[in-house]
Amino acid sequence: MSSPTGPDAADDPHHLAQWRAIALLVLDFDGVLTDNRVLVDETGREAVWCHRGDGWGIARLREAGLTVVVLSTETNPVVSARCRKLGIRAIQGQADKEAALVALAAELELNPAQVAYVGNDVNDLTCLAWAGLPLAVADAEASVRAVARRVTTRRGGYGAVREVADWLLAARGTAFDSHST
Image 1 (cartoon, rainbow, N blue to C red):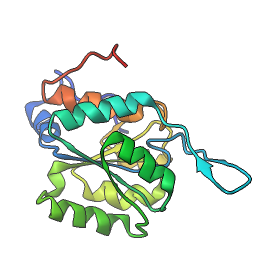
Image 2 (tube, one colour):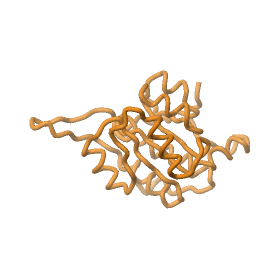
Image 3 (cartoon, one colour):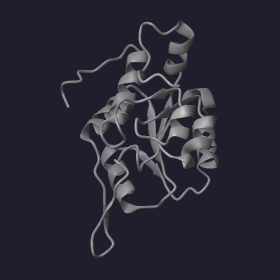
């Protein structure tokens, strides 16, 4: 079973080196940046809840030089809007998420050891298997939690991405004031 905490001083140097090697953080959208619910109005327009702390963590990762990308099976304007607000790339409409992840890594000239992936459902399993640092949110499906290197204590849409950002920054020896969100 995966540990619910990120890297810390008790981790061996090889393990911390693996966390420090991450150059790309790839996030599923629904269930990771959201609580996996959707509000649909009478016109069919969708809305989701996102956590501002996740945005803060993403901004700090970008400042630290990491690339953050959303990779989604669906194509949805709400994904595009949120990613624009966060200043990150959204890759949508990907039935084969692993192929899209491999292509993204190749485009950025990265190998799997430089990629962290955060998922929550079975359509993330192949990406989690490919990425050097597979991560899951606390309320992910059991099969996803089982393959993750680490599982957040927070649920998707409730600051799980901020928690991952804290782990990645801590491994680099870069922390930020967690009380400023």
